[in-house]
Amino acid sequence: MENGTLNSIFTLKSTRKFAKKEIPCAILDTILNAALRAGNSGNRQVYSIIVIEDPKLLKKYFYGGNKALVFVIDFYRWLHLAKKLGYKIADSIDGLRGFTISSMDAMLAAQNAALAAQSLGIGSLFTTSLHREDMKEVYKILNFPTKYCFPYLSLCLGYSEEKEKPLKGRIKKGVIHYGSYSRLTSAEMDEIIAEHDDDKNNLGFVSEAQRIKEGYDHALSLYFDKWSKPQPVEEIRNFYQAIKESGFLEVDKFLS
Ligand SMILES: Cc1cc2nc3c(=O)[nH]c(=O)nc-3n(C[C@H](O)[C@H](O)[C@H](O)COP(=O)(O)O)c2cc1C
Picture 1: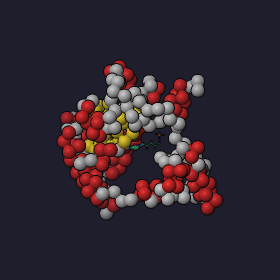
Picture 2: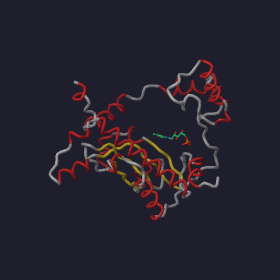
Picture 3: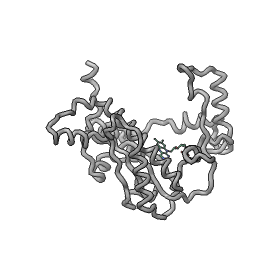
Picture 4: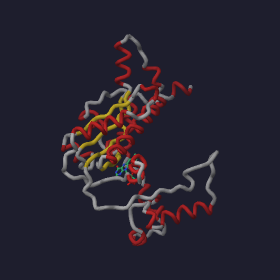
């Protein structure tokens, strides 16, 4: 594709096997600058990016990438800038609303980083792996302020060591709606189920032969059965406790 931007968008895929090769500083810096160029609410940049370079952390949390970027919901810096100028603005974060706004900033920056990396020949993988960990430990290791900071999405980066693999397909039917929301008919659902079942669309993670061997008639059954089991309660509690302590779960005062 001649258009470089579209080329990066249409060739981006997840990398899960990273080479030991170092990402040069200048390239990492370009990726970070690309992240910063993303749109953000009121140009406040209420997020942070932690660059992870420690090999132990990269191995433990970030799929052995050569670097990882942790995109953080972050009003801490903003509040402290306000405080320095004599303002108290904690109420203006609006709890979960602030979290939502900041998460949008963080996600747009993360996608910019992934696309910039792709255009520079660097593979990437988004992960929420930190949410599956002991988050108290994560806060400690990354020196996060407890309040008004929450690690959101991470992007593992590195040169790919994967064999050439086809792009994962995407479903369009039922995802894009023109004018207003359209509910799927039964026939349309059958079409989507069939799209998932067809190996050549490469939508899932196991082949048709494998899923039949595992006793599943449909690829989606794998998602809805095997992969939709409740997560360990401890893991979920961990996640909610960290959000609660961050102060972003305050919604009741706006609803009473
Ligand atoms: C929010 C988010 C979290 C993800 N977490 C993981 C993860 O923990 N482990 C993983 O192997 N892939 C993870 N992925 C990658 C997705 O599985 C991948 O994007 C999807 O299967 C589509 O494949 P593609 O990126 O190759 O097109 C994540 C992606 C996103 C956007």
